[in-house]
Image (cartoon, rainbow, N blue to C red; front, side, top):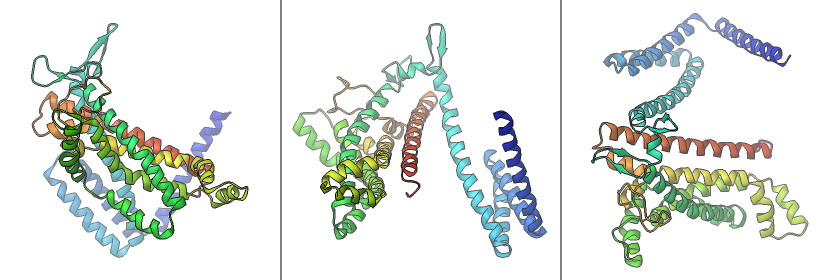
Length: 375
């Protein structure tokens, strides 16, 4: 019965789409339909030419631009709808192409680093169980373990910096600061997000790293601790901005009700505001973590660039390599399997950040559902 109902629902939806398309054709004159048809055909031809790397791709692109200009003058509403649809589809296609490209490019080294377990050959397993990266000696080994370890170390330190400072700053701006202070501090925090990462890395390299070498008797420059501090400061504006929006979305009636029963402002913030906005605050921290994982230039400038594990593993006063710095440091001279190994690092970063982004979207969705769609 349930299956029959589902099939009927699908048939009804398909019938609804057919009726809408029929009404659209009946309400649109032939000239407008011709414009839409030419634009659509030109887009398909341009996309095919792009995939084939053809020099003639410029022809359908030119046809599309000319037709779109004519349609904008004669049938603006219909052309605008088609253009917005085109931009949406293009965004999805670009994401799919990027995803497919990095995965396909990573395939050769994945099969090269296969390992056999209980008689079963598992592609790429050796990249995650051996600790050596050696692109020179024989046999060549491309292990992601040292870089994953470095990325985790930097991310943990950055999260320890950005999460408490960001949530505290957001709580201050949302609940404590006077309006004048909020209007001055909030733009200043957001300006921090616009500073290029290479500037943060340069400051860390010229100020923090030499100071750390003198104070802790470290040989050379670059430590996971101070790279994490720099990356945490870079992620701070994201955490503050998103967390403040989440705190502001808590209904005022909940706060007023808490104050009405005799609680203090601090008790209201800790027992009502923060728990109610926990999903949004968690999303802010996750977005900050995603920024920390994907940071490239600060890690590349400050770290030593040696793809090996620290001894002991928890020692944050040494810094070797992360996934992002590995790619940035080697892509110019890498080829063959080494280039494919860099794509594996890109795949790991892509999947990790994707999971974090989906997780942040999920907790934000829970927050919207919790407050009835008011945010």
